[in-house]
Amino acid sequence: MKESAGYNIFHERALFQRKHSLLFFILFPALAMLLGWGLRGFIGGGPYGAMIPGAMVMLAICMLLEVPLMVAAIAVVFGTAGTAMGGEMTYGQTIGFLRNPDTIWWGFAGTSVKGAVWGLLSGTFAGFGLIYQRLKFKTIVTSLGIFLIGFVIGLKLINDPKMLYFSNPFDHPRSESWAGLLFAVTGLLIYLKIKTNAEEFRLVLRFALYGLIGGALGFGLGSLWNTVGVKYGAGFLIIDWWKMMEFSFGLLLGGFLGYAAWRSNNIAKNFDHRMPVTVNKSFTREVMLTIVLGLFIYLVMPLLESYLETINKSDGVLYDSLATIARVVVNYTFIGSLLIIIALRLPDLAFQIAITLTFCHTMIDLVTDSKLFPLLQSSPFIIAFIIIATSSIIAVLVAIFQRKQFVLKSMFLIIVWSTIAVAIIRMFVHADFRFQQDHSLTQIVIGDMFVFDVFVLSALIVSFMVIKNKAFQITTIPHNKRLKADHFSNTRKG
Image 1 (cartoon, rainbow, N blue to C red):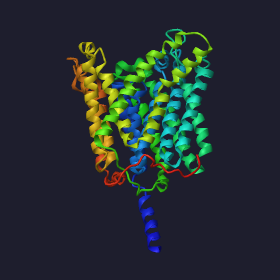
Image 2 (cartoon, helix red, strand yellow; image 1 turned 135 degrees about the horizontal axis):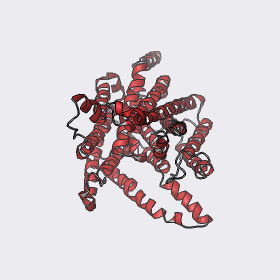
Image 3 (cartoon, rainbow, N blue to C red; image 1 turned 90 degrees about the horizontal axis):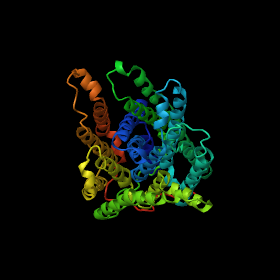
Image 4 (cartoon, one colour; image 1 turned 60 degrees about the vertical axis):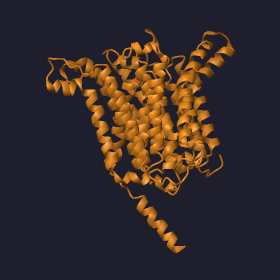
């Protein structure tokens, strides 16, 4: 017994010793989210596009914190969904204020508030994902229910009556949701405060607050690139100021989340690093379930949204109530919560949700773009075939590599280079590489190819950081074990 205890003490000291510098903790998630956020605005918009930076930064955090693979698989879904939920906010008209000298500060206030809410969501769900295994399933479901109720309250109290409105009320006013999301995540944090112990809640709150700061600074300061572009753009080689905003947002938010991870480095002691990890379902079943889930999310839910739009045209208290419910059901706050629950009950599909479904939307966004492929729009079956075929390839890759060693590394590289491939295809088809003849080599490289340069360079850097870093191999556990659906430990009453 003494010898065993001595081994455990030695094991813990060796295991929890910091293997990365503070700079690495900040830089790796920052570059990962810079890349993901830039890709989000290029190959996929809205909340589904925001799954890209969410998946990348959460994979980075799990590798940095040496989260056991069993926990990391589902934690990545939490982080992916939490970041994606912020994509429900509209901000195009808010940024428009920054291009007018008379409304710059109102636009800056709007982007700062929305960035803060977005970062708060991303950080809260990142922290939530790191402690979920210590909570009852019932507790997690209840917390997501409170989250959705808070979303409705915020919409009805502030957003719908436009009590504090950051879009243009006179020219095609947009439906805002930042307050709904703020109320939602506040309700979630209050509930977690009640249901978790001090150490667990401190971790969640740390990620939430650093996410809030990083989001506010990232989107607020980053959005000012649009003002710079309008006023001084002619004197710079950089021509895509919108992308500068997105890159800045991702860089700062990812960096602050990385610092939160640095402050949480002792979380490793809360995990059982001997937990088994791999899947117990057949390869074919996993891929088929992924395809079915993708069809539900990207086909059934949009059809439901179209059908529910008819309810909004009806009058009466009953129809108003149904319209509110419908508005929540088709919103990513509900869909993201649903994906988290599915991952908890079917952990075999966790990486498929975070990686394959994220990639799938980028293909939908690509092949349904009438400006890129006008002739293809008259052939819906060909479009469906391309989407299903390419997504199935990614699903197969995910299924293969989550049965091998170095799983988190593999998942990170798959999401990075599959989305980079889509971005390059879009660039070539969109003729982004047709440079003006009067441009110098410097203008071409720094100006015309600016977005391409950032994408490829950041992808290469983060890939190098992952491949060459031997410390990340600790998340690998032999694949002769099995991952069970009831794996999360219930350490307290829910």
